Length: 237
Image (cartoon, one colour):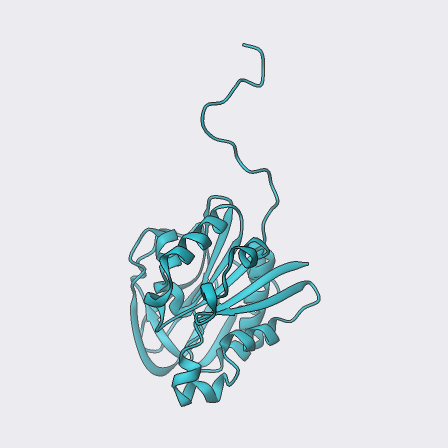
């Protein structure tokens, strides 16, 4: 059983009617329902909960954390960011969705500005699988087409990914590295681009398949924690 926590700032859904129509119970609950699986034990957490729902107990019992944020990045307390960062470094998986590219935790882990081009014009997005042998791409078609999405375009200010799994194309001519993996410490990180709040992207079976696959990929490996610092020899010198 993989313990999954879905974190969503849960602001747009309560403030903007067009978002409420798409996700009446919040993006976090749509994802919880769409990802329901006998191998996942899923809980949710939101910005307005005490400690943003990410207490020491919750994080210590989380194998993979999914993060969606947009208008409330600056409202996330630095203490909680440090707590999440420490857990990722210790082996917790992190899946960063859409506009969470600008979240405090993703920028801290990347060490870059994480900025990009963007445009809201209800454009088609074609997400090409460029690494079909990867676990996160298992069971997917050659490409995924979303009829309406927000455009993200290069240059995406991130470090070179460990692995590039998806590349998106938009009718305006832009392309984007839309599925990227990274490792930090013992933790595995997956950034996945689609998911603008006004579109029903998180009901799409292929998008849910990607996120589900990424949970299996990002779960902790349970290997021994590396020991650093002054070290006594294992063999007689």
